[in-house]
Length: 293
Length: 136
View 1 (cartoon, chains in turn yellow, green):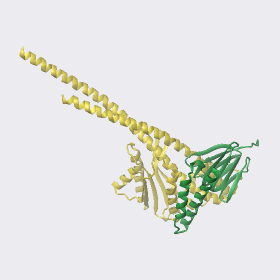
View 2 (cartoon, one colour; view 1 turned 90 degrees about the vertical axis):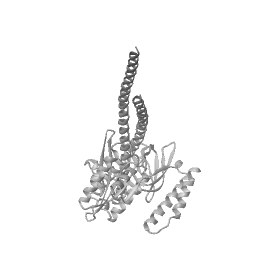
View 3 (cartoon, one colour; view 1 turned 120 degrees about the vertical axis):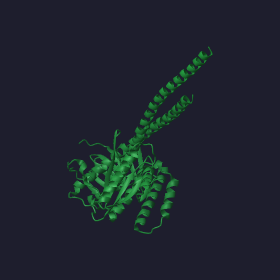
């Protein structure tokens, strides 16, 4: 009968899909491991830089007034970097980031602040096109493994514009990676630099090391702060890459499991259909024999 | 404190820790010339320039190209934080020559472009010099 055959066909296609999703899960797992190692490799640099900033701030003593730390209240424009993925099938990853981004943009607009959006990743670009929201920049050349040289120019342009007074703040919206089981969409304020960016991380203990500074501590700090901003943005990209792979891993695992369940259900349905078919045929034969007898 | 005849040297970029070793002598390019560091040096924080970083571990000497960054010496540990650190073996002469030509061909419409061109030219020249010294 046609019914049983249809079910067999469907089961076969579900099996194929399960094979594909399982492979994708494995690939995502491998990519996650690589991305995670990379994320861990950036930690020492970030930490040492924060230590240096703290030491220098202590050496200078009073509150350092670097242009990157100054908030310009009168400029009603801020830049927002949104980090999405270029590939799909990663569950709620892009949705989460984009929801956070749109929420942030709307609240800024409500405050009367205009936004320049730099969108990273094809998924975010097509979503914003669909919503007809303006984007200043569309960045697609950064792949799964962000390189520092790729991120550096973006940070430099933003800092330039901030110092020139074109923008009063810079935010990054990305999926922050806390642990393999926890990622949250986060809006991070990159500029103006706040104290928790580095200065606070010594936990209040004053280092009393007498350094030899070359050039002066003030000049060193003025060089260090841009480096801090660059590496923070880089960290955002790295976090986003790790979170994307986790998102894909989880989504594909769920898909594989759902496919397995579907196969069980279809098998059961097929067996029942087959049995019904046999019973019907037997009834036909018995009925025919009885009619002849 | 026991005086040791080596000190710990780590070279760290945003992407990875390039080098972690015990060193006898390190010379790094400072913003205003070269600085040599021996064990038990007084604490130092120094801005770096473009140039070659040499780390002598006793048996071997590591030579790296570094582009800016910071050096910190504290408690017999030298930390080099730089945005770019590459070993000589990672550089190839054709690529470097190409980037030198590109840099020399840059037009100079304003001050910022002049700074960028000077930096790019110096970077390429330092890299070329590094390769040439390594060959000898």
